[in-house]
Image (cartoon, rainbow, N blue to C red; front, side, top):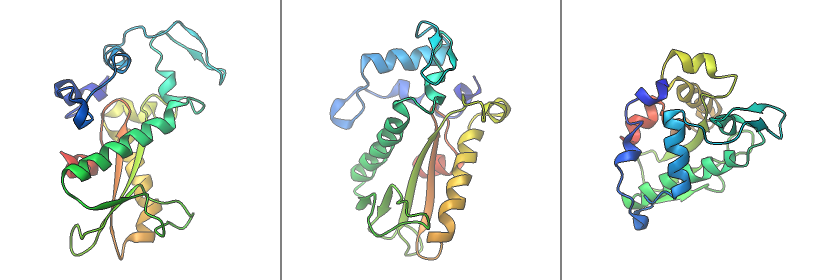
Length: 188
């Protein structure tokens, strides 16, 4: 419930549903979002394929490691950020080849023009959930803290690889609408 008190957590309710701007949400997505926001029953209680008992609110789908939506949420957020860059006339490369961190993984975006101090901006997206067992205690302390932890993990993975030539910004979002501080400062 703390996620609902986070700054800008309800901004999606104010967005005009303009399809050409990527702001159209399907009826099913609105139903799920409103249901999650108000703690309504969204499904029939059942046993998940991972073996966990799912309650009527269906929040387990946000935390299940076997849920198909996990990767989709990441890609949708990455695409939204890409659209924001295009709308702002920022020339950027999506998943730039040749720019990898030490484990061979690539960031989600790179500006092709200097962002600050003659350095391009490197972005990497992560979507986390406050509903996962490993995050429940942190989420109970305050809104956005799970996203803040995820951003710090991203920083530790990327800062050594890119610190001298690029500005790295993690984009960390909780699927219950909270952002880390760095993401809020960059986009809001």
